Length: 224
Image 1: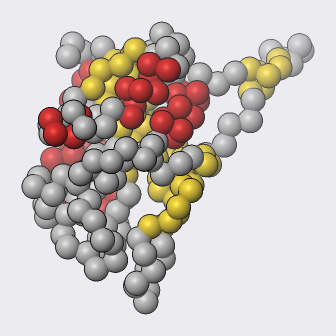
Image 2 (image 1 turned 90 degrees about the vertical axis):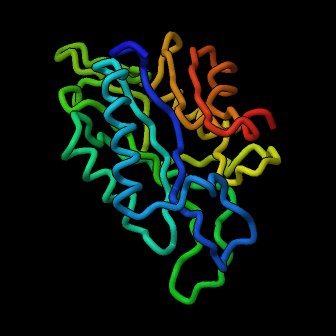
């Protein structure tokens, strides 16, 4: 893609959770390429973020849904630190996504069943206070010109997934994507999903009149 080409990204990458788990009954998807060391995983994601920075418009937004393996819960945090240190991108916000159902099953004596995941909102450092959103102005102070916006919070309730049967089990929902689009992406936006999977982001963009580009390494997934 050309430099500064896309308005933003909505995606959920592999979580690096391919190791066999006792607390789930299914394959988590991406099993053949998602069994990396901590260092390998961070370096692989960083190479992607270097490209994201290049193709992202200066006022663009990345919505990055990333959960964690119960054996390495700190991995997403370590990745965010390296993105901040080693690219021109930084975290502008975090959104807590509350799902309908919690996973994994309650088989651990120490770990909690997760009903929430984080969506990291990432922007260019130079645009930390000026990146573009789709927030609606509710009123303007006539004396000062101060704008007040509709109430947008960093807490979203949305379905786990859309119930599509596939070997990719860790899909998110159109419900979640639509709510992210409503906050961050005006109608003329061009949204990219580098891990398109079942095409969830694409379907939401089509329904909400947003432009879309996607890529997916596994043809079996996107053809399902």
